[in-house]
Length: 210
Ligand SMILES: [Ca+2]
Image (cartoon, rainbow, N blue to C red; front, top):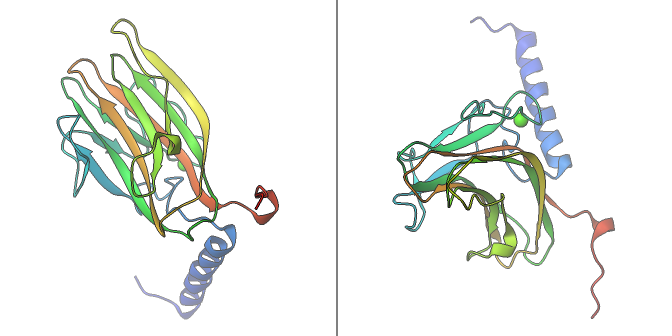
């Protein structure tokens, strides 16, 4: 492609305005709305069988992760733009895994993680999760969809809005998604969109008594 002089300028203006927008929005997650059409900004993790410790992987082998999120049945529509992300552990698989992103933060300052999550499960132990790791696992910093706790019937939850607040004790926190199937029966799917991590605005911070 021949680049005409004007095009270069337009390119720089577009990149510059994107950088400005990122700087002023206070957004700390990369591609939390998945509008790149892929998992840019995120890394994969998984564990197999399902009850092992999770570890980063180049590409997951036991869980399918896809954008635009057209996996599973029923497929919920995206909540922002054209793309969402879907995670699925398929038939006869037991595994858990998902995406994660490490974010630099200021310690002892409140942050809020918001977004949308949807779920399908058809067996005991099918769950999908979004959470924050601040060094160690803490269920207070995670949102789990309604657990599928009986074998008969399917359970699906269409988009729910989630919101998790954290005051980090470390200067790097990890935002993660997790979809898990404990039993080799049926499948489980989780959908994610519109994920966002921002500092809590000064005006809405809770005043703390000394
Ligand atoms: Ca989206």
